[in-house]
Length: 321
Image (cartoon, rainbow, N blue to C red; front, side, top):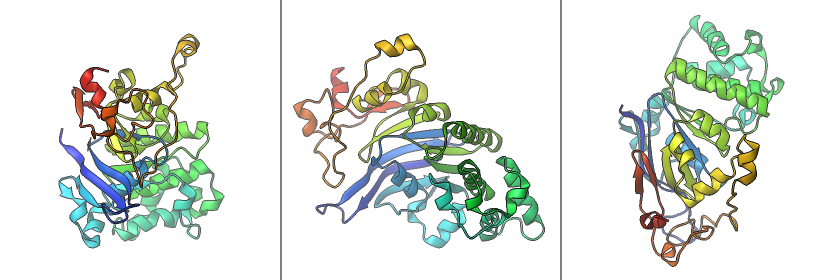
């Protein structure tokens, strides 16, 4: 199956490249997403997950690299050419209330997307808005309400509705459930999965909740300080994590078996995330890594293939550590 999205060597720098103090928010990130599939993007706060998502949809213009969407390099397009293709590439933000114009009723918030792209003009517009609201489980009477009158779950459904309005092929979901109650999280996750199955959508699901990511993803990419350090299928990465950082993340995921949980070893990382404006030399994880050696300070590790579709960046893998 051909990839719908291919990200190649993506960089997002804040400040002149090479200058002191330049923040390398995203540094050399590469991955692909197939049609109808979900890539989970995980890592702790500040690792560059959201910036990667913004760069893919070109809300932040990359410093270098390519974002190939259905064969077209989005980084090479001007804003007018980008508008024509953007309807096929949408984003759902973490804070749904902040992403909705508080002065517009729900019907106009959804209809605005149709108007911008010239979809369903005239009498068809109202019918399409009601169809979209029904698709995300919202009652038709909410069409005249304003965002402040909605619950968090309802507001996130409206945000999903706006993304669906222009009939996209891929949606970047930037922590779409992290601000919601646990019971509402499950509803939104199930809704996203139902929509994916019904409409053939591809997702990039950005989150720090490893349980949610495991539930929704086909493949998972683990980020640390602007770089992807491991990528594999969800089953492979949970069953056989290879990078020391991935192992520490997986050790923090609770196991629903009391006996296993009682004897399971947790890997506690020391120190804080380094300053992205002054990252460590060599492997960026080495300052917190429990198995780091002197060579880690000198070598920026390449990708070590571990299994089909599974690789990690750690020089200790070459030694079998």
